[in-house]
Length: 277
Length: 277
Image 1 (cartoon, rainbow over the protein chains, first blue to last red):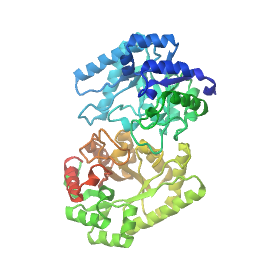
Image 2 (cartoon, rainbow over the protein chains, first blue to last red):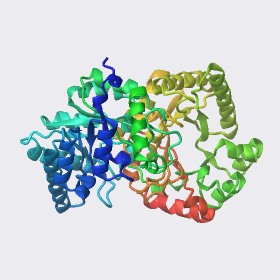
Image 3 (cartoon, one colour):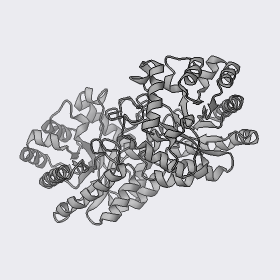
């Protein structure tokens, strides 16, 4: 097994990790300063920076853009809402292509307002990805379905296991794969099997840690090594499946990491990437 | 399909629902006053009341005890810890028998302190239930494995899907079944299939609701009808599988229901049971 610690160039920073105190321009410069060679930016940060400026800064610093966050949010209460979501996803594809991103990450969306029909929402997601593929596939931009932890099933993503994401890939064919985030899937008894099944369709590998206790459903992720996820084991499974892309650090942490000096955060990200991941 | 609203005698109150403002004695009297004919008490409440007193009160009011909360918490860092857990589970069985409970609910436990080995914890759970069965089976006290939501995998229960619980039942044989709590399983894409698979092994059916947003991982459950779970649909699946036992209302709600007058809570529980469940 390849030792990722010996591949510092594969470390990627999801820009949400330091979003509270740095602009995207500062993040790009910070990554360059700390020897982090890849980023996965968010749409709102790119919008705030300006797409052309962001493209220029990324090119200047020679950063790899391993993924773009995010498309998805397909379900809606009516056809007009779904059409708006698809149109917005087209813009996300356009931006991803402009940035030279290797894939567009899809957080697929949860229940439409007022709905209790999760099976229906899942069908809307499948239809939405199929429709988006008609736009993304000819432009050769891969879509990465990211299963989210079941605690987000109602309001963020009704694809909650890697098995579901793999089933969608099977059904939808070329141009779509999966993003494996250890935070979302570490608990899954079928994880090893489904990672092997995903194989070369794995388009992203995201890391952080699950803290005990976890004090907030959304914004209390831990730094790698501070929680209970056996990240190295999951990384081993992902590599055994054939994945050789970036290891993307994505930490939403309102009470801790977002409060700290981003330079300190990036330094610790580098250290933990080498020692824990 | 049987209409549970026409079976008010099947409504059960999990005593945690009003635990903040009433003692067990008050809860038993309150249930009698509100026409709630079944309860599922917690060990600490029984201990505070005194086991014999609790047995007497339950008998006086003619309440059904559809389940006892709870056994489990099997994994531990060493053999001595696991032996202590088993011994404590023996006492839970004894108490359940004294109370005339129809089953002992098992919240199986998560990772031992310092461990990242969830597969190992799951093996410890399997071994623990097998050992407890040797004590419970001869006394004809069924054990109900309750899969908990994956957000509790680290610190409360590493059995996180009904499929896992069914697999354990298959492996462990007579004397063990499952408790289906809509809060823990509503998101599961395999839920309908696994409820049918569980069939007559379903020993309990628990209801509350998933709020959007949910502000706390443990103590922000909603009253039936206030969230996004299609409780009636899941109840239909459970009944189609052959379950004809109680519908147990279990709401941990630090910010809302635990603050209210318990008499008001029980009245609303009754109304929602009839209109939503």
